[in-house]
Length: 148
Image 1 (cartoon, rainbow, N blue to C red):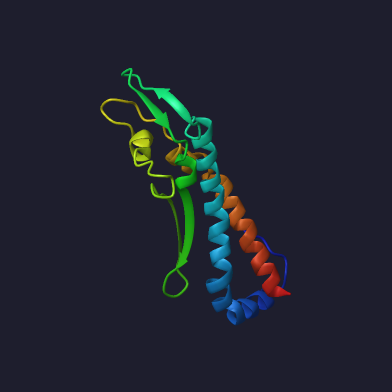
Image 2: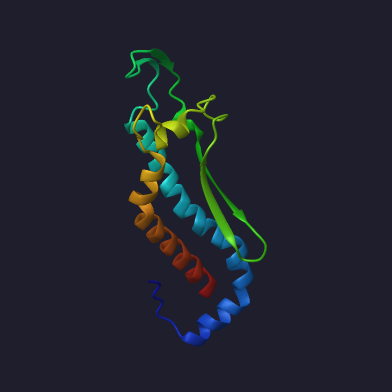
């Protein structure tokens, strides 16, 4: 919840004056603050479960393959402003940025041969509250700067 102790008329006047600026400039930062927390946790989860490990690895089937350890490098986030005041953010995985680690989707969701080892979706559920708090803090700071 956002709480500001000032005259209500001052808030209304400032918001009417700076709504476009708030929507176009500050909201990108607010959304980026939240999405970066989730992205950072997804990268950390991938490191914790061993997707940054390099070298030979034995599959449950007995087959040995060489791990490149590049899955964490493929996790990225970006914020885009659409028409008007709509701002959206995406957290995604790009196999090209991860050195061709196309199998990250299979690792995340599993297959008929292996159980899932989530690192990406786990970050969303674990850090959703922290991301919301960070976004609220950034938004209250932006509104506070507008009122000065």
